[in-house]
Image 1: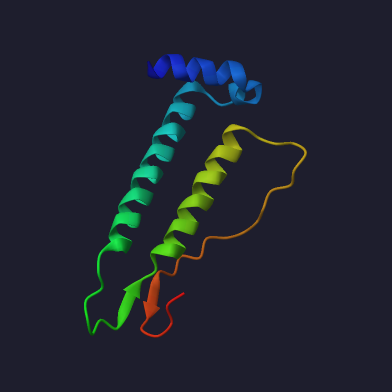
Image 2 (image 1 turned 90 degrees about the horizontal axis):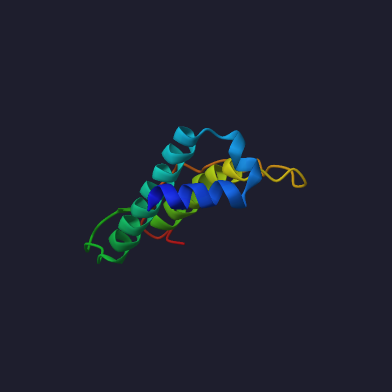
Length: 102
């Protein structure tokens, strides 16, 4: 099944042929892991905050960075020659102080 999906992907996206099959498979695994991480972060964000907690993890910022990494992998797999790359960097700071919630 996975092989059929991979072969269909190569037939639909000619530029992806430049990426080796093993690299493509590894990048597909990374995307699945990012999806799992995003789901875990979404569930964790829904957990009630403990009263008196001074610092909070910024799940919204993490979700933005996960999306950015995922988009970078997808852009690599299907390069667009007409569009320039977006040089936006990851934030990497996920601590919020009480009173500074987005």
